[in-house]
Length: 534
Image 1: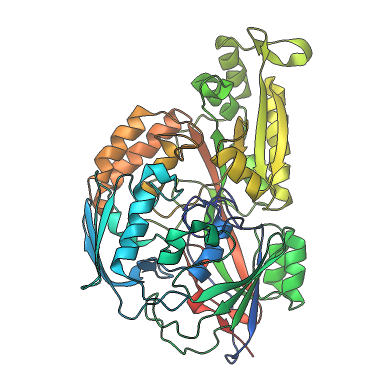
Image 2 (image 1 turned 90 degrees about the horizontal axis):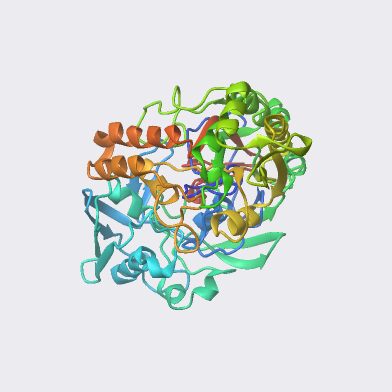
């Protein structure tokens, strides 16, 4: 559930594409049922909403995979539960918008016992930053073309970016670092691991469970972690449970210790006063595929489709009435920029205006009321994720009804996290629109998804071309930190004026614990924070 890193929501988180791209985010809250004595030698079982697939941390945009990878890998810089930067693999870090320098902690080792070196860290950064390697982390954590050098004698890593990145130190610092064996042979990373994380893979049964065992020698990061702290589980089982009702039942019966619940089952868990942390995340984000030749490449069509929707009602349906209106693209409670970029910048609900706009664009009603242009029907394939429960299906059906009244033939396609990754993110199928929540913690992490090259050579999966956005981003990127927020806001507003994407509702996803307590960082459970209870 960690950043986009793209993220679908509760799975990402998100991703995060909602539960797919990157549930990375957020503010944290809790209920009081987390008391008890710390227990040693226990197994912690966590329900995950989908199979994580390829575990290679530099080739995923799925929040569910990133949550798994946080058990296996560390990053140079950690993010505390209150959103502050803390030491990770690096105990010192500094920089500006074009250079960053990290000094590694002493004594960090990989799972096989070999020391982590500065040159290996630099190799990670150079690999991801090279567009030829097609890492999904390029443009999210590592700017394209960034170069790193490592000095093994001093333990320092220096990074130079070819273009300004307002959050360079934090972005580069967030990359999962792979050890040297995995960098030489990435095939071992698909169902195993080679990292410095607290855990290593003991068993991988795709579609069912992943068993991890704790490294007793782990003595570093994030933040003020101390070796030997009480209550850490000796074993972690990540159990694939796609049905939220089943997952909730497993938690209540004690068969699962941690689970994220986005749908209505969260109400009965809250009634039990179960231990809870909360992850705020975008849930209602409507994306249009703007690839040349598709009807949704036309601004008039995108605007009409948006006008045909009552976004307030749609938001209530997909969040069971518990959501809040989206005000910007960065996840609520995350990032330095508070600007409301959404309100007043999206087309309002007006079915008559939508019909008139399609008429003017040459899409006229034909047989059966379906609009046609030059003999081609206005037929759209609409994707929505299955990993977030029944409310997403209800929302998709409401959208289908509204667009059908507009004269559009809409085919709904419920898709798994893996299918979104393959069809949407990797560009291996046809889609026209979809509910694809993308969760990030910084506006700069969105840039590669909203501009530049599309799949398979880039991350701009919806083929957005918006020169005004690009110009504002270039200006914002040159201004370190929050001082550039006004320009990041200008960039987002440019997207909404062109209806490149439509954010309309945010959700709060509770993450429940029974027999265990924990903290969150950017929406993900922090492995080093888990305390098993007796």
